[in-house]
Length: 548
Image 1 (cartoon, rainbow, N blue to C red):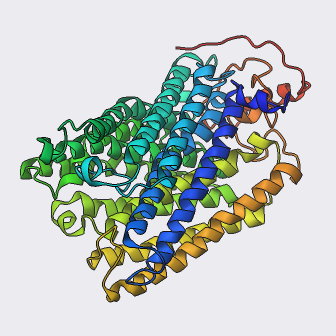
Image 2 (cartoon, rainbow, N blue to C red):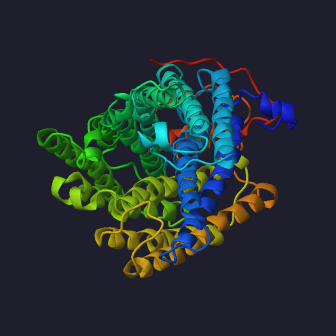
Image 3 (tube, rainbow, N blue to C red):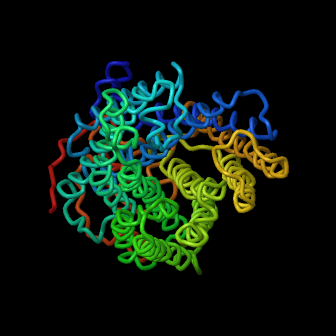
């Protein structure tokens, strides 16, 4: 990883760790752009008739925020950055199964991101991130076609990554790494990859059909051309509801790793937590209809979707219960990444419980398309996924960079982010319940106080996000060097030097212990001692090990 620093060596690398860093830089840049658009939206909504934008410009800004955040940040962030870096290390593999495909996936992602940015800066897109027809296919002005093409490319990048993870987990586990010795983050990434492989092609085809209707005039979704707009919603949400779990499941997996390491305990009910990831993936594909309670969908179909949507809460609740049981009577270390993990649990619980209101037919009819929905999906998709990502980034940062970061500002960032997030989005539950529709530029004056409170919270949230940029950049260049295992965690990634050498393991590991083995003898530490005996610059040939 440290052998060559030329630009060519980075652009042509097939090392999964370097590709993870390429994703880290590019995804962070897109997050900054999406965050600036969010700040502009919040500032604009502090006055009932807006501040500086026309209604057309406002539509383009909030659409840009949604499209960038969903397709260029939330979906790829954890799998492409932390999954790419950590998954091969955690299962004892030298790399992913298809290293060149991994690099291609980054180039495809960048191509899609470039198309989206060109579309947003050359006329803009005002369809929102959902691209509902017939507006997106017939009436919308702006560069919608290029934006759809960009999202289409982004989907292929996800498919390449998911395929790589599935094959790697099946074929490249170290000797002795049985399925029920896998770290729970690997289980979560496996379930996420299954969703990506089964769901992403559907949305890719859907958006391609919108593109065909818009450019060639074929009637597929628009009633004016003989199409059916409800068909678009069925196809779009068949992917887009499971996509929520593409964002959430990796964050759930990270939380397991952090809680186990900071409580020095095996995750309570490990097998149930592992299976609950697969259960969430399975349920995710049969609940898309709850997004359509307010359409012409039959009442009986809605009742079935409502019941199934409630059932999703069961595997989610299993995870939360088992985390609490693990923390109970554990020697909990309140490190910065633990604070991010605890913040994740809090936001995930609020997001999950408010989802029950939207799963119920009666309350959903009142709340649909209001700010209540905006608050709910920000708690789940942004609060949950983002806190999970930040926790994982802090947890594996010493392994990624070989440097430690200062704990005090990191803890401060976790607390400010949690407080700022609740200040921003909890008022939106109230204003949504009171009847404020989402996406509106102008609104009734009685809602203004809630929007001002929300905007004030977003300022606090911005401070919470700015802090890590400062101390992590400082840490990268000036931070004290990290040991191989600064947190005292168990797991194969902590048995090798920080940062890892190019092929990860100097000697192919053989796993003889259970996951999260914190009691008694720690066989993982024997590997750690063995690794320390080697010169970091010398890479010994590694015996290929597969376990199917």
